[in-house]
Length: 314
Image 1 (cartoon, rainbow, N blue to C red):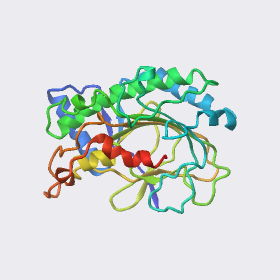
Image 2 (cartoon, rainbow, N blue to C red):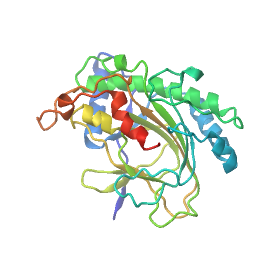
Image 3 (spheres, helix red, strand yellow):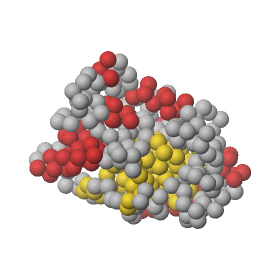
Image 4 (cartoon, rainbow, N blue to C red):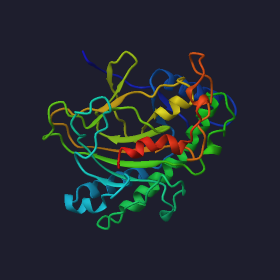
């Protein structure tokens, strides 16, 4: 059997504090999850269910518009705004693979709407006039994710044996993005076509909320595992930036969204967290194999690291 239905570890963070037993227990669970799986389910996060519901509802209204209306929000450069079906391919293993069966609307840290103003790497957000409720709904969700990401940085710091606010202090002007993704029913999918091709996230930490199943994660033996979706539960995974930053101690897992014939519509909200753009990616800890971390020989910044990702959209 190729695919085994499994559940990644679940971590409840509502009792986490900067000091004391709850903090160490939560941090230990994160350490084990990121080391073994690269993923975990997050509960006790404190994000309002209405903020989540509003973001999904406004996104549906945007994606349900005629194509010509959505195309008005397509960027001329960069990746913020709308990207239509068949315009992106996540898989980096097979350059001949079919484009992903998804459409996206993305926003970033643009100071014009009150979010943290970051670096020049962020292009300007594009807001559709036809769905005015999309902007407040996604901004509220973005800001909730920005706050949640700071909580996660405290837990990550403790897990690495660092002072609790070590990463928080480098993340007051996050260079983070939010992607609202729509996966239409798969009646027109080509054989072998993915909704989201297999890939490893390039950012630091990803926080995902989704409706409908389909996410699969690859384990260290190369086997794919289905990860079910639960309402108001986030899936958190380590990106390649974090895995490199900690010298391979944690896993940036290969993952994808499969495309079974006749699958119903799926939506997801994906927050790609990154610290401040000028933050140097100097080693946070030693390599798990005892060798010198690559980043200790050539220290680059968060902004530099992300340029390769941005170039994919130009």
